[in-house]
Amino acid sequence: MDILYLLIPLSLVLVVLVGAVFWWSVRNGQFDDLEGPAHRLLQDDDTPAKK
Image 1 (tube, rainbow, N blue to C red):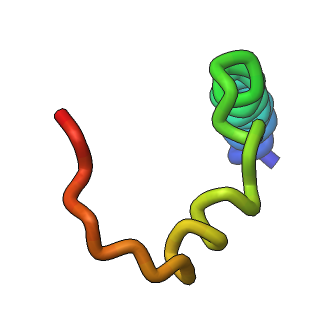
Image 2: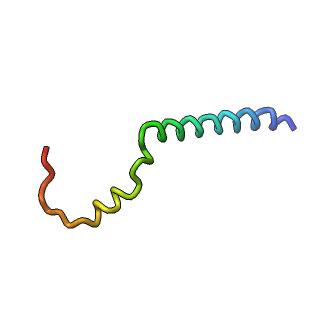
Image 3: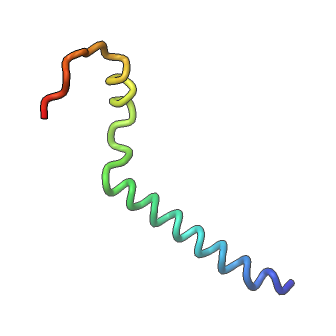
């Protein structure tokens, strides 16, 4: 029973941490274009990228 006093707050902190990381990634545009990189991989473009 004493272990619950440690596990419950620890799990709540973990949930808040995961939620904060997810919210940060959504607000910074990490999930904006999910299909673009897959399509660029399949394109046959041998020209070097311009810098």
